[in-house]
View 1 (spheres, rainbow, N blue to C red):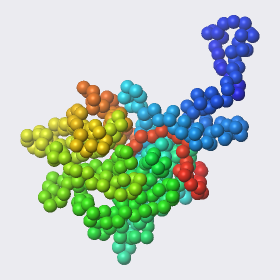
View 2 (view 1 turned 135 degrees about the horizontal axis):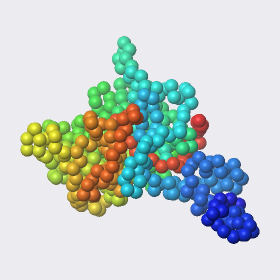
View 3 (view 1 turned 120 degrees about the vertical axis):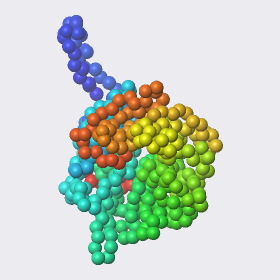
View 4 (view 1 turned 90 degrees about the vertical axis):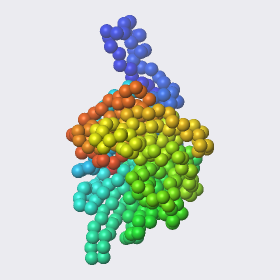
Length: 422
């Protein structure tokens, strides 16, 4: 392979023969693949497939896909959803925690699919998760007729960089009394599978879990979850979930008054065996109102925010003073008693959008004037708020976002189905 090198006459001196030697350098194919192609964005990599059968074969291989993903994973980006109309944008930040202006992703959908996503009365699009370049959403429409409330919906998993997507029918489409409310999407390395976890509620507000496997292409229903755990729905903050060592953990938002007979539990879901597990409640958790699980530096962690009554001595001060949050880490993954408090910081008016693997928090305010600002918070620093950015020009959804990298992973990577390419 011959690679052209541009040079500047003012910077390179010598005779014409020397310049001719510099202008063309032959690189071995394996170096071009390992050191150059694996570091390029997805779009030029895909174009490179047409160079030769050799490069088409190499770029299409699982080994190159993994190598390219590894090179892309160091970028600091969060993917967010806008509405009216729905768009995908990325919000980037550099090593110094400086936020950059949002960029709309060049991702289009065919007309029939796009029409299903137009905002209208009773329609809802929810963010399920982002992992390894794949982004998952849930589209749901509700309406009423003489027989009551009805709904239809579907999930869609897309790779914006490759312009690929697939639709997945809702598991409760045949159960009009059920409603899907909260979702998670991610990758389980130990079984090389991507899964969707969805919580469904029936008319009596009993909840169930449905699990979709990309490897099998099927939904599995985990029954009688409510009766098994005896957990009141209002205790679990079901929209905030995190995975650590194959377990999916639900965050908590405790009501002001919890009936004494209702047992407080930490709930984990084994994504491999698709079974629930209960973890003991620690007494020190009782002082907090919100408990958000996340993973920081390879450890399961908790971002804990006290209730206003525990952070202020009067009602007048509680409405104006910033709240202090604590970060706890589980030092030994299999020893639930080994939680240690790492640090505290003034979290203030904060609605978490995403938490990075290093523990940095991407947040936005609950209300004006901070509602239209996003900020990077590093709790380990003396001044936690590192930078902020005005997003008033973007009609962002108030839902959470997720980390994003470009990848060559297809929504159909584990089994063959019809591919939608746009």
